[in-house]
Length: 221
Ligand code: DGL
Image 1 (cartoon, helix red, strand yellow):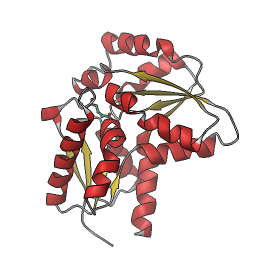
Image 2 (spheres, helix red, strand yellow):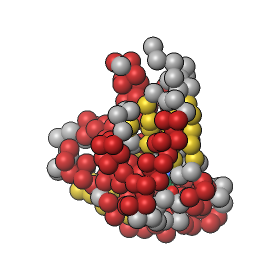
Image 3 (tube, protein in one colour):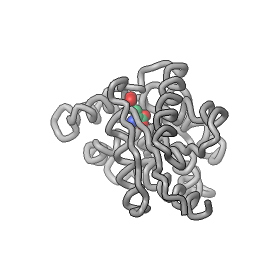
Image 4 (cartoon, rainbow, N blue to C red):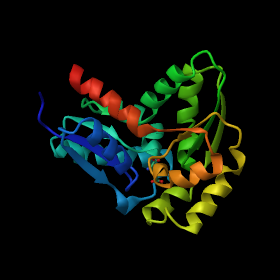
């Protein structure tokens, strides 16, 4: 067993939703968490900037002697994961693949309407959409960039009227979906408001499936 910690990285507090889930499923693992709040938000930055910031985050974590890196950020996963995997030999895992694989399993042989909400950069990159189309060609996808949600969550505004109304406004165009992917790791922090608007729609955030995947990787490894 490799006793070195897992490295985890996000632009801010959003990745802590992943941290919590990994700790729950892998209680004996130590985690070094980097929240790059100085350069927050990532969601509105160019792909080139996201790649550069992700490289810096990874190099910082490699310097902490971690055994594996989790990119606990939808924006960095969708725009930088493939690039950084080509550069570094350390295993690097993002939040998209394991979540879409789980969805595919859940909706196999069905034609679900899937909503994806995420930062503007993530939506622009089609990161979730490409993976869904690849694994679930029959799915219909609706996407919505929600640029104000992560900054609000970062500010601690998750439980007030402003958060409630902002979520409501963004979700106006995401009605009638069977499943909703919370494509940014900050969004589970406003999940209660999302539930209020969409009722019994099923929610998927990256954290539980990533943690399960991580468990498989670490046990196999
Ligand atoms: N938590 C992030 C994500 O999953 C990024 C939010 C931001 O920095 O804009 O996309």
